[in-house]
Image (cartoon, rainbow, N blue to C red; front, top):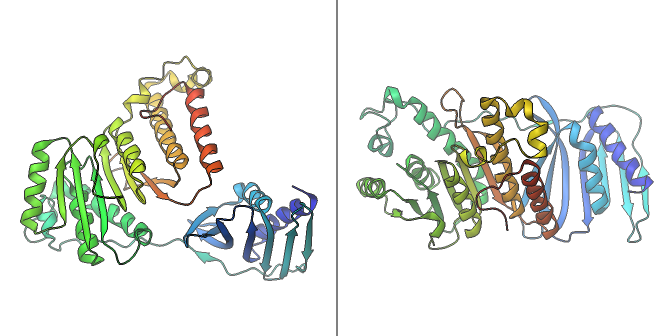
Length: 390
């Protein structure tokens, strides 16, 4: 970066600290797929962040929230990859222009006053999808509620889990497109609590045409789910007994779900969903034995981390974090924007992590960078995640 670009980066970081930014506009990107990127201040979980929204040539918009510690690197990267940056504040404006030859000019008309800009908020209280003491036929058939709508005592955690998952579906719903029939897969569906819940939500709440398929290896479970779907009159919902790694669905799925697929089954779900080109993946892993068995204290990283490795419980938690970090990095290398969050209160279940992945336009260079990060982390820790990477 040249002097003017560095000065602009420092200026934006200073304005962020003073909370005077009204809007940032980055344009004329080297990557022609990116039309522009806009930034605004928001309040997220009680902390000020810069929300960046990228607009791409395929009509999509993606958001990224950046906190103070990561801001200099993020802004520096943006400025280095575009040739115009406009800074609009409560005290004036500034503009950075960079020529094709790499020369930059900063025009700064921002006054010295510190009038704070209005800060939006992304702190939204989640609204329950399912209402307690209301009768839902699918929950009754699945043994979660009584005929009068009361939640069966031992099924309280399951009710909350289903409701929270539906909230995540509601969050990603705008990414599923409008008008056409949705195609949804639940891989390693088991008893299919989520399959029935998501089908109900999309058809009864969103009033969408839906074809949905649950897949699992257990024939008795598939038979039970098929009968239950018939009893409920869910004509667009079907089930198939199959090995999901060899499953060829009707078409590219809009959404792939998976709840607590055990150990490498989660990896099979994620690699299958990516292979099929799913628009959105919502997956909650179960156990991570495969990586745990590879941590033998022999790699340089493991030797350095011996204070963790010598305690079985800490080693187990490290294996969980490492496994899921590699899963996320692999998805990024395959063109997905990925985030990790909690599904439900940890008191309800220790298997509480949610991997949410949305396919986005991504340059091949970025995918290659994520793939290299995956390989570097694997090599450092001396492990091989099931399925590897392309």
